[in-house]
Length: 544
Image (cartoon, rainbow, N blue to C red):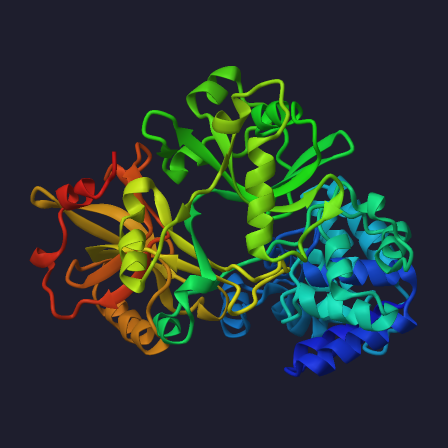
């Protein structure tokens, strides 16, 4: 299958805003392409495993070195286009030896045979290899080639659109296709046949998690349209969303990011193996403080992440629990179609009666989230506002009549988060953004007062609108004190309100603190720098 066909699909998807037309293009493509071509296309579009053979930065550098193009010229072009692959695809046009070349490279050949050779080459040979490919590939396929090379395929096609197209072609329900796409899949013909098999047995999905149900953000106006008695109220835990799967003697822990973390949390695996029954639980992995009977800050959980074989000391010092809030399957029976109130009863009834060799499992390793007793909207506000002292993020509001579905559906689940913490900081550094904002200063560093000196306490990259960014960019250029490569230090004259979800002690930062998810929420034009916050104010926010 020629690369040209995939390029035409890419162009159709990238240039069309209509969801139905995108689905139709995908459906038509899948019907007319080979099995191997289809599975590779699926992988590229949904980002399942888009291998990056070289970085976008290296791509620009290679082009400049090969064709003796100054770096500044390439960067100017990049700032206008905002995508390395697209920039090079445009610039390369006048470098092609034969403008009418018709390449016969297939998608499979490019991904599985030609590009993997790059990993075996040194820098000099890589440049020669890529130059040869650039001059071998037709104009029509240059963009797709460079996109595959850099592993970047953001073209407004969600997994949901791909699933709809496969469902249209096969007649298989979308939920089944989505389930089959969960977890690790090899990009080969066997995988494609697995996806489109009309007679697939449930046992063949034993190792796979279910697609996760997600919550919408709660809107205050909803209070006027819903009956509070129809909902149940849970704590919104600040951990790692996961599913624990125990089927046919096999145990796996899957994160929402579709990663197996069995090795990271061996104590959970060990304890779960003692249970006599099979199940799939939906919940959250947390570091638990037994003395205070609450989870520890997310920063403690971060210390467990990335450790493939945590030591016994780590397991003891940072003990994990699985906080279950839903059960999706029991003894091989998929119960997602049951309403939430029924699933909750099944979870509670079976949980307390699970036959286990180790009775401590019930209260030490796996817990069931408790329901808040909410009778009115005042109770809801009170429960939400008290969440921070329990190291939770707020509440999740769930319709008792809702079935467990993939993705978000309005009216089923709502997340009602506590108001963010805030500090007023002074702008001290700025650097250019990336992509289409590469010629604007959009990344900022802020300081607060420690005694009579300014100390940097955070970076923030979002929160201002386009007009404010342009205005601030002009101010930064006029009020620069020093330059450090792309970074500028500026006169400490502007105050901004910085919001964040949490704050903790950090030895890695000069200020001694670290913020979680910092963002700019207001340009405080009404404040002078002496009204900015002090470090002591920030330290008082840290919960014990």
